[in-house]
Amino acid sequence: MKRMRSRRRALLAGLLALPALNALAAGTDLPAAVDLRADADRAARAGAPLVVVFSRHDCKYCETVKRDYLKPLATQARYRDRVVVRQINQDSDAPLVDFRGETTTHARFAASEKIRLVPVVAFYGPQGRRLAEPIVGARLPDFYPSYLEEAVEKSALALTAR
Image (cartoon, rainbow, N blue to C red; front, top):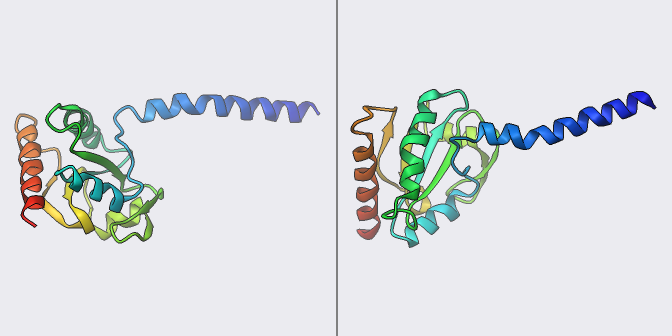
């Protein structure tokens, strides 16, 4: 009986700690991709791309790109209601619906997109069409915002040209 109470307490303590651990781990995380097809369609209706950052949990450069560039992009008045930003973790088996509506995982989708090194920021339209060249790596901090803005604008133009 005593052992059972002890296990219950340990389980309860573990469950109570989960939100704190998730908040700590999610400090720079963006919304995880769940349904790429729906997200790309929603972004296209707003006249913008689906912006996907391919990341890994142990990638400090990914954290920098998410924190310093993608989170601010998603909150800028110019893009806030247009750009849909999602995160795909190359090292995760989280379920994902791809652009064809098929079920896969984050890791398998990243592999199918030939993502080897991260971070990679990719710009998609409906049906998974690439709208601009992806931004690979962290690049130069002074120029990264302009790379990002240029790719978003080029993607928006590609959507209207279809």
